[in-house]
Length: 298
Image 1: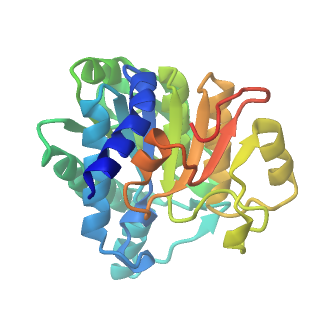
Image 2 (image 1 turned 180 degrees about the horizontal axis):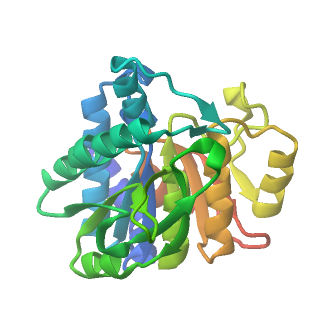
């Protein structure tokens, strides 16, 4: 890279680095971003880019919490076992066997892969789930969905302890109720709940689409900026479908609990986190509370 270009990039990034230093950003890393069949680029390079982004954000003083999904990975394992996935409004119907599969895949595979990728940059990441240290108190979301959970309460003590040590909590979205029953909780919902409970500066959802669209089937209809009220109108019109439903609900919930901005980005774009946070170029959908002036992209 030309030296003058390097200087330009660093100069452009500096105000944003200063702005977000010591602030908390919750990043949801979608399972679709990790799914080799859904991306043209190699899954290993995608995870490597994400991990280096997290390491850099931590190095400049940003407190990062990663919440990850794993839907495609759960679905793949279920297919190997001859089980068929059924979805209702973007949520997987979960019986006892599916719950066991989800726990194994999310905690035993996906979480370890992300932690390992981040820790190649130094001893930064710590894996945990909603079960650990009472992080998430869960309850059944809907009896028709089986063991799909809803966040009832968040105890951020363990997250604050890790963040205060400049560590990156990487959270798998399995949690239990007070009676010990385990639930699989949608990762977008968990990320939104944690962002609100932490008083985060931002919630960033990385997925396999460019953001919210006025026409779900037309990539060219991306909406770069929305307020909560505008997003609710769009949702009521039926133009928010499938897996985008829990994402938009998580954004609204986090904003209503004090998060300053929520972003939905295409996590397959190399270093999309750094582009969104540290440059003037907007790359996805930014959602804010009504009347909140966030500027062009951040």
